[in-house]
Image (spheres, rainbow, N blue to C red):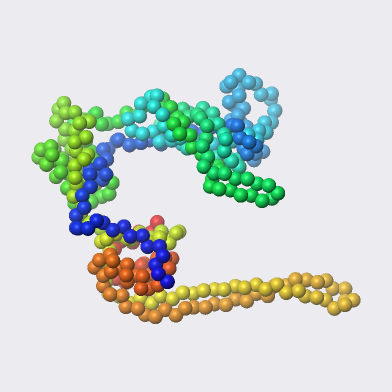
Length: 362
């Protein structure tokens, strides 16, 4: 059986690959900020929260009605079926200014069956500091669909979450350190000493020696002259071509899906591998036990269970040394292992010293 799920992340031909600075690094402090808020969705077609099981939804509705001047009699029990309590999230992009619009995601936190057709009532969205940075409101777009009748149910995609495009208005801007200080700090997405040195060298080549220097494998400091146009300076350097060396050999294993991802630097030393499969089969056959006439007994149904264990023999196979990714893939395919079996085989190869790569399990 061939290797069904082996995802190969190979680099382009040649030992060095070039990338733009904007694709491998970012300016420290220039980032998005998560926003969250609790809101209620109204206008549902009887698919909202069950108030007896989700008490916070009628409480939120009561508070909203009181803010609008509607008095709820003491002791009154609200049992709406077209209201759902939701969690509203959004990402406040860098440099966002008051009045701009951002998208919001809406997810049910109760037992609502569907949010389709609902309207999100105005919801304050707060940052990590507890301040309100945006207000969200609008009609939900739910990508799923479903129907139920006579005990049967059919559903496509997810109905308990939706999205409101441009559903939030920014009310407060987040200050950024871009215009502060005499230096800028560039943070690389992946730690690599060679890449950090290449970034500093490219900036010095474009803006003059001594402008940038690598602090470590991830941080590059950039010195700015007095009165320099920072936006223009960043616009110039973000498109610089950065030469990247091959990454460290790494194999990523996803134990949940059986996916295996390896880069071009992975090599294989000569080794011998035996692979076999163990299968357990359980079969149940119902049988009827009929009592004798006039015995007063009852007819009963019993089950006969058979359990069989089979093991496929795995011959000892010699795998040649592979200095290229194609050779490693060819050797692993020769084993005929499934992706799930390959997880154990690669870990055993690593322990035996035959796999020259770092294993990462996610």
